[in-house]
Length: 499
Ligand SMILES: [Zn+2]
Image 1 (tube, rainbow, N blue to C red):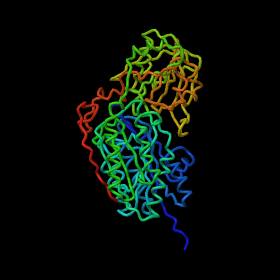
Image 2: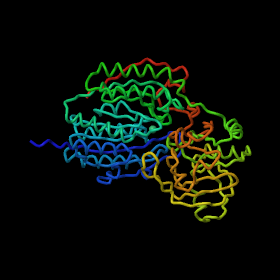
Image 3: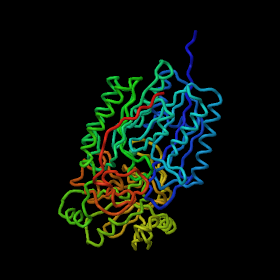
Image 4: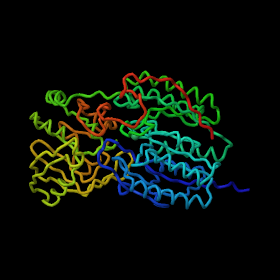
């Protein structure tokens, strides 16, 4: 008898939001691939790219429904969520009706919409309703996602990123697809143990290559590689996604051994808890960072993690530029900023022209105000590029390089991820040509900036993704929560999900 070709429904819905970004995102923030368009991810370092490779290798037939991805942004509007949700579920329903043996759903986990603070939970509940109780559903997640009880009740397996800064997108998709293959070909009823840790974490100790978080992740990886766990991971949530189940949490899934899943999840959670103090952002005041930078001969990085567009901030903060200008910093500065009006003014004026613009403060007006500059338009572009790590497309809209005094600033029309150098290179700039580079991301891959810089200052300025978590004003997540509540306690308890 020929071997049965298992049919796997494939869907994706990914966004990460900051509740503290005043600008809501909408349907138009999403790049949507329908059916065969999803094959554009083949060969890319993305979860779907990794999963597709395994499906081909194992002889599984992907049944392509829909993929929707948005850059990090503010809370998704009610109207945006309604339309997106309807489209995703309609596409899934159409393919589910053709009869499928399993579902792979690629998610981030840190979505939230006006009126629906657990969009992924809603989607998975509906998908489960469509495919029935016996079809395995496996999801992949960013370690910054918020995996909820509602989500866990619907899924049979999961794979979670093991690296930060993230580089293992494809391998996470591969792990999800491998679990899925086991679930359809072996008679396995997985058990997932979840231990919630009332702590939000940030800072350099989260860098998995060097930080203490990485030491724990290596234990999770070991459990997977030794085969004790089908999957294991430690999710830290996006601390800026203020939703009821925001937390850190350990997940261990086994092929049915609940005691083992529980014991390992509890062990990792107990090891995590005392490290929470170390896993906090260490910030330097702007004045101190500027004063020290002036005395350092080599290039320095000013990390503006508070305006990290990849975590959901607006990208229009000019606070570091203002501080440098007021302090009279004289060396060459390179920065990026989102300001559609300034970009439009530069495009209207043309290359070589001089424009007077109010730079920045265009979106998060509660935190930032425009900075008057008269600048020369050095270069104009359409703002298209590809991320260095994932090779997926970036679209900044009309983009301009403005020069004034000792400053070179890339000005974008749209908020976009800035966790690598893609938009510098795409606009004819090499960060190594400058003395001070502003990076709007809490961390980047080491070789991109830190490898050649003499210092990296994590500057304490306001923003929708400030590592000064107490400054943000969480109102929805469970309390007490460290460090919002210094006295938060922890009594480790595992919740077991059986499928
Ligand atoms: Zn992430």
